[in-house]
Amino acid sequence: MRYDLIILGGGAAGFAGAMRAMDFGKRALLIEKERVGGAALSSGALSSKTWWELAKDFDKLFLTDRGYQVKEFSFSFTDFQRIVDQAVEERRQQMLRQIAHYQRLGLLELVYGTGRFIDAHRLEVHPREGSPFVAEADYFLLATGSRPRTLPDFPLDGQRVFTSDHIDNLEAFPSDLLIVGSGVIGCEFATIFSTFPKVRVTMVEKADRILPYEDADISAVVMQNLSECNVRFFTRSQLKGLRRVESAIEYEIETADGKCHRETASHVLIAIGRVPNSEDLGLERVGVKLDSFGHVVSQSTQTSVPHIFVAGDLDTQRAGFVNVAEQEARYAVERMFGRVKRPLEYDHLSWIMFLRPEVAGIGLNEQSARAQGYAYRVVRYNYDLTARGIAMRTRRSFFKLITTDEPDPYILGCRAVGPQASSIIGLIAMMIRFSRRVSDLCTILQPHPSLTEGIQECARALLGEAIFKPELHME
Image 1 (cartoon, rainbow, N blue to C red):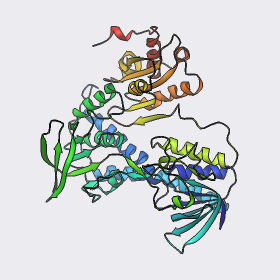
Image 2: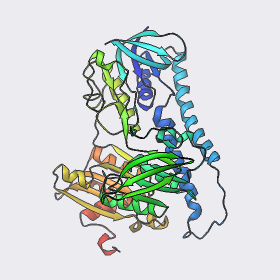
Image 3: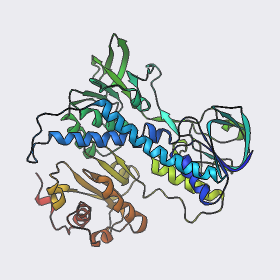
Image 4: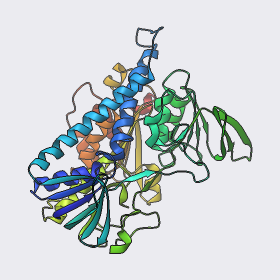
């Protein structure tokens, strides 16, 4: 069977690439190993963020500064899990509905199974049901994604010792959860689980603080807030032992001073990053180059084989974000069929961490600006210097703007730490995409009262023009 395009992987990147091919009226084969939507849907962005939204709503029960106090409550892990499953399935059905539409038109074929290159233009496809067959195409899109990295000396069972891929296997809240790793995934699940009563969380991190790739002030706020929710931290520490002991898991942590701490946990979450799913695709047979970590080497989504493209976590370009995967896949298909309108750019890539509080960012932070040799300026502006921030009763929330060091500076990056951070950072993404000038940000008429006024005041503070002077309100 011959197609215009064959896509390996039906996650965020694969689906977006398929839909772009449909826009051009191309005939495509979409091969998905397990479930349409991939890890980003079932065990990633939508699933964990639905958990986070539920935890955030539940957390409001314990506020005591809003004129009310809740003394009696009940909650059910089963009911929470059902709501998460409903959200995931709702999104999956949207995807399947579109796939079915194009299947009826004869443009798109979906096969559950795997594919492996026979030669540069042919795949041997192994469906879950039915006999293997050979499929041929003019172009290919590699979008098989990634999976959680594991510790080779500590085998998983998917129930007591697990990764983010196994969250659906839980039947109740862990009473005592050990999280190995404090990147985005580890901190997000620490945020979620520590919200619920009688759940103790312990985090182990090799670096000297959690979220080590972010600036210290952001790490400190997240760490302080988590500490107030029964989360303990072992930084500059390593997990040295892990074994099952009856109904518990015994673990050993070695700290920087050489001391060993032996304790037990009910569950252990391994959250030490992700690895690309590049094995068993036959890439070496057709000459697709990989780096030492197994990522596909590419130039603007095009691999070392000109008609084979890559998008998402399998690529070497950027960290694993759904929006990046979708944009790369769309761009790759546009390149294949000569429909590119503008180059693929990453300088205005924004992201969100669903923590306590929410953290969103774009561009450089202070430590990356220093590492790249920039002469830069930085300013912080607290949420509670805005009318909306005061109304929301926020605390420890702030904006942070990093710019070039010149009279009318350019924006290098921004961080928002607090409620609605993801909405705020979108404004800076637009500024970086179309202007970059701090002076332009200062003159936009923002709605009032809104938190976007705060990021505007932050820009004014950088130029010494803020209405509310942050230096006069320091605690």
